[in-house]
Image (cartoon, rainbow over all chains, first blue to last red; front, side, top):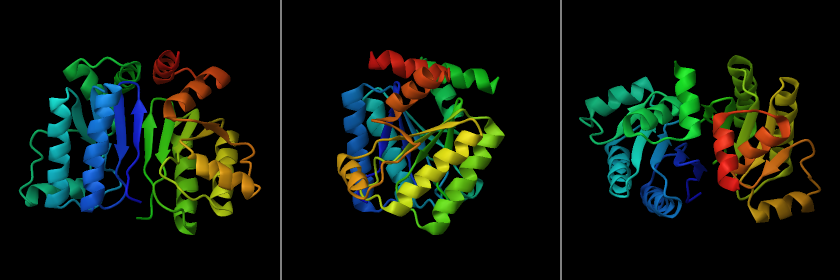
Length: 132
Length: 132
């Protein structure tokens, strides 16, 4: 597999990372995401890493790159579903994921985008309701 | 990896299949999905196979099993994002995915669940609007 599928949900794009991001796969993901943001006018990108048990400095940098790339296209990136062990590893590696927003799960990620960045989508409203 | 992440979005569950479903992985997915439907009271399950380029009879049966299992728990399953080549292969294999609903993408899948099965979620409304 040399592509990670990007799902469009309203004004958000959703990516679920289930495999290790080797170089080409990561570059493809960056390119595809930027293209999708441009084509769909998405305002938010949600990257689910709940299936990722190991995050190295490479992946940390990729996530940072994606957040920066989408931001200049006026889309905020939220990394969701990070496992506790991954959070520990990240900090021990000295990676604080600067510029990357995080949330506990997809619903909270959508709620974050909607409340903090005023990205109004029905789905986000839906999630906010459920979180209350 | 021995688990495929299941994302909760409102009253829907979303699964993105990006790897080949070998036996244990498929069984885990079945178990996890049924558990999630039971715990979350989800009314719809969306399975995205846009990253799947080869579907054999085993995977066809798994999809059918999941659809049947979730249906008895009052949740409809929609397979979305099937590639044209996969559709051709399925029929040539004599697999018509009986009992499995399909849609072109996640948004249309949500719209299907909402319009045909009256599963009202804001996200589905959102998608319906965009499809019009």
